[in-house]
Length: 212
Image 1 (spheres, one colour):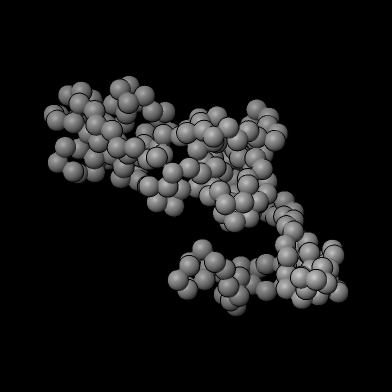
Image 2 (cartoon, rainbow, N blue to C red):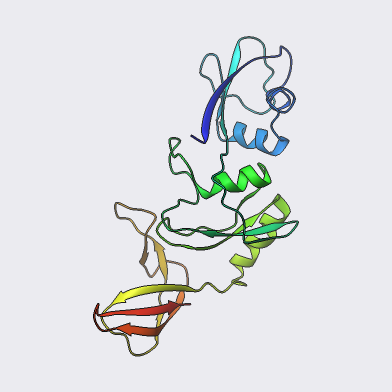
């Protein structure tokens, strides 16, 4: 289980962020992030803030303890890595009880500052770009914002598709039961996808397509 609740006896007079670095052995970046997200509480179940001077009792820390199942990156440099995520694997825990995700491998192999640059659905297999540090995270995410990457997927669709189709519609987050899905909306973000047929399976009445 990646999210673990741990208790630590306080050091009287020390600030919360210093305690997390000196005693809990978290990085300064992670310590500030956990304080900001309200994941550090005292013995009276009060959320601690940055700068809070500890007096007595204990504090509880909810931390992400990564595990590994041996999934290795396909390629890596000093600043980033590429993983081939298999179908069925979540990239990030959706609840605290989530047992194992790609983020486990990322943090286990590269440390707490490593993070996903983008995400794909659990059912989708494919390449995931991972930043090993904050600098790489900023640069790579800016490239996504500026559309410097080209995303290509292969998918099976029902019936026969004979010609290219360009879907040029604005999209936004769906307001249905599953808010991770997207829907067409005039108030959404610009989106363009080119669908190209690759091959047709007459027996199954399915077309293998490339989506760009």
